[in-house]
Amino acid sequence: MGAAWLLRRLLASVAIIFAVVTFVFILIHVAPGRPCPETVERAVCEELKRQFGLDRPLPEQYWRYLVALAHGNMGNSYANGRPVRAAIAGTIPFTLQLAGAALVLDFLLGLGLGIYQAVRVNRIPDVVLGNVTLFIYSLPTFWLALLLLLAFGEKLRWFPVGGASDPVLCPVVHSLFCVADRLWHTVLPAATLGLVGAAGTARFQRAAMLEVARQDYVRTARAKGLPERRVVLRHQLRNALLSFVTRFGLAFPFLLTGAVLIETIFAWPGMGRLAFDAILLRDYPVVTGTALIASVVVVAGNLLADILVGLADPRLRVRAPTDVEVVTA
Image (cartoon, rainbow, N blue to C red; front, side, top):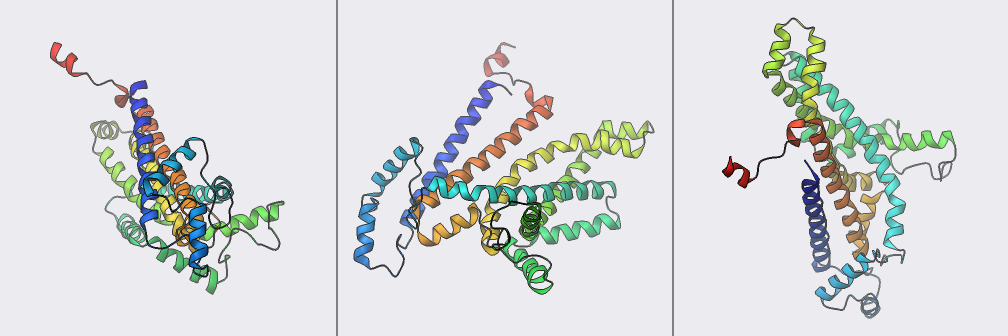
């Protein structure tokens, strides 16, 4: 792993982001519908389309968008006239709060369950937890969200059924009570994303632990009479964490795609709900803007995971010989 590798990855990342933005831009423009409410007369809508340049050919619209984007201008929302940058900036803190809470639950619970199952492989706890995690991982995220909402929000009334805070008592976070209120509103949506992610992480980590357990150095450590706890923590878990780092990078796409449905179901004012509403309203600048930010986060997460794996595993930092070196050797 060196500067050349990092440069190639950065160039590939930019190309992927460009491809995603291009695909979303074309798809949203050719999809049926119009960027005007149904109550607006067609003549008024046509005037609005001319005002926003939507009557121009699609290649010209795309070129204008790229030029504006190169100058840091993501356009203005058709629905409310706000700059897209400001609209997204207002939702990012909520999405980061939800994704952060779900990520902590995902990896703490998933890592703990994976280690516990690997230590008790093929025993009753491993079999039971394996089936439970497979069941949860197989559930559609929106279905689990509705189930938790109806059970713990509507029926038991343990948690709020929607929103990020109490709109009357805590319109803004200005006290410890409002901090607790914000966290209380986060429980159900974060649990929905976190539980599904933890189920996948547990199965992933269990498989990694069992793969490492077959290595010679682990068997040698046990043959020397080392305590089982030391063998598991210092020899088995330490090397199995490489897959954990990879899983960390893969969690970003899951959290962002799942957040679109979860934020909509729980009325969470995040970027996913903003994108969902923009798609329904055919608000083209907001849709492409949220897709741009989401692709940047996903690509950055995967790039960070690759870098961390390279730093954690010295074998990946060894420069592979070139074709010339192989021939001369």
